[in-house]
Image 1 (tube, rainbow, N blue to C red):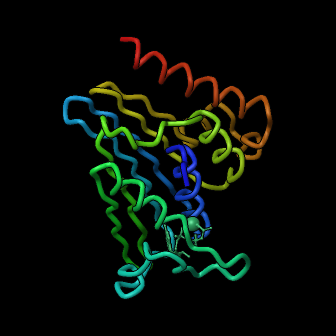
Image 2 (cartoon, rainbow, N blue to C red):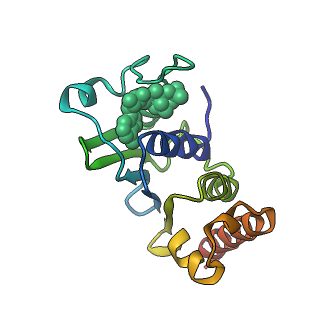
Image 3 (tube, rainbow, N blue to C red):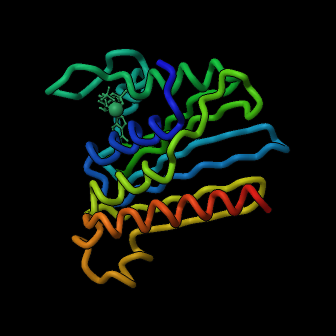
Length: 183
Ligand SMILES: Nc1ncnc2c1ncn2[C@@H]1O[C@H](COP(=O)(O)OP(=O)(O)OP(=O)(O)O)[C@@H](O)[C@H]1O
Ligand SMILES: [Mg+2]
């Protein structure tokens, strides 16, 4: 179960798309002063009832009907807790869900970030109908990219499915993150 943070992002964002979200915001915050790495996925999907929410992060809790799994949240919870952090889940039926994982930045067990640029590309390209926003902060500096902002240049959502556009997004995310680390 050694997963990169980027794989958790993919998992948790897929929960949002499965929940019928039309807007999904993903945030990664790296703060070495506070010794925190956090990942937040916020959506306007169908949400969960209070009863369901209570058990959502237990292994095998799922509304899946195909593969019976239900391990996305339990894995993330286990990983965060192993790293001195926690999983915070907030949800309201009909309104949306906030999934947040907090890790101690310096924990030796903390998952590496993994390939975040490829993950952003996969999500934007895979679900062009969704308004995505990706925000990444490194020690007070910030980078963000959103499909709404990209639409101003592209004017057709389906263009998000094109490989060249996807690769451009990936490179832009990669360069921006690299630049935040350098400065
Ligand atoms: N953002 C969300 N909005 C609404 N319901 C959610 C959301 N995230 C999780 N859930 C509910 O919690 C259940 C458990 O989520 P979890 O990611 O652990 O497993 P899964 O998505 O069912 O299966 P897997 O992630 O293993 O493919 C989901 O089946 C869904 O009912
Ligand atoms: Mg899942």
